[in-house]
Every structure is written in structure tokens, then in C-alpha cells.
Image 1 (cartoon, rainbow, N blue to C red):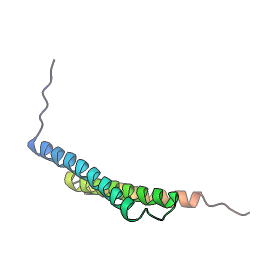
Image 2: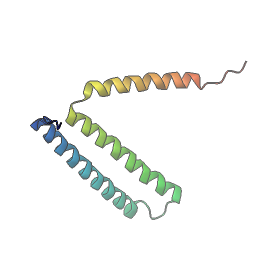
Image 3: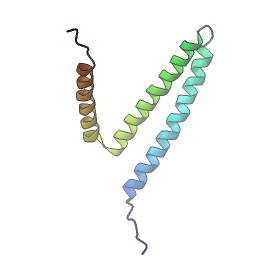
Image 4: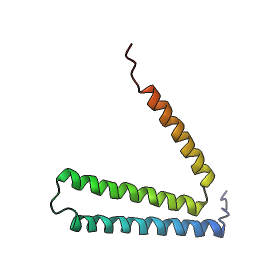
Length: 101
């Protein structure tokens, strides 16, 4: 039996905004990489080039995720995830310390 899905106009609007944000974010990240190559990459080592490129990519992805979270209004979920990540970081930091006994 076929089932019908009730898709609200708000969901469609959010999906459009998310797709636009992803495409625009990708294009902006690529433009920043090209700009960085033209400006910064003249007299730097391969490792520095890679570090700058990856930094642009990672910061761009994080900003895109923040924008998507704000579009979907997932602030409570995000706060919970950040709290859990903070606790996990502390636990792993304590667990990774070596004792000198």
C-alpha cells in the first residue's frame, strides 16, 4: 500500500535554505582557496600550503554547519552535543595521562 508523506512547507523552505547554504559555502571555500594560492603561496613550503588549505576547508565546514544548525533551529541539540563533547574531552584527557609510579 502506498503511503503519503505530509511534507510541510516549512520543511521544504528549510531544505531549500540548506541546499543553498551548502552550495554557496562550497563556492566560497573554493574561492578562498584560489585567493590564498594567489596571495600566500608564492614563497611558502608545501607543508604550509597544505596547512593553509586545510585550515580554510575546516573552518569553512564548521561555519557551514553552524549556519545549518541555526537554520534548523537545533540550538538545544547542539548545546547538548557540545556539553557531551566537553565531558568526553576531559575524560579522555585524564585517561590519557600516564602515571609514573
